[in-house]
Length: 215
Image (cartoon, helix red, strand yellow):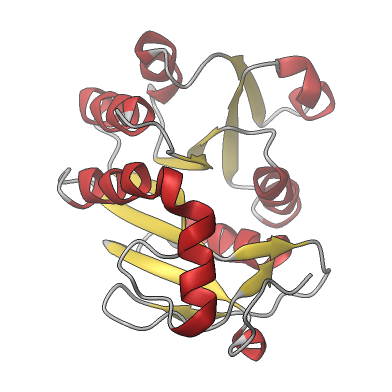
């Protein structure tokens, strides 16, 4: 069995991922880490799901949850100026010899979003941007096999429709569905070599050229 830890397991994208994994990948055991485990009590009844209640800023809790895992998926974006969350995760993974990590982030880390939309996006995210940039740097320099997911502005459309850009490429698109973001994570869990050691932008290419999010 492949063991996957989801940190921030009650997030909207995380819940889509969890539902799909339970339906599509029966060889996966999920450990779901969240502040209030009662929120996922129905999933906790399943044989291949373990619920852990804890705070991602508490190293001891993260370390305990990381034991025996094969892959960690971080459903939070690290907006903390001290990057406590990412530092805790990297340290716990190294201590427990867990190699594969997937962490959520946002578009604009490398000034890769063009035009008016790029200017507007920067004005909206700049307060947390330095922390997100440093979290990505911590992952890339950690020695772990990592993927940073640079999400666009999200919508709740049912469609799975996206294109992927890489760290040295201009971001394509302005928005995308949560279903699409989850699809990338599900693919990485199925094949951990997919998008390894990369920072990827994910968005619906059909929204390219818009100057505001598409809902």
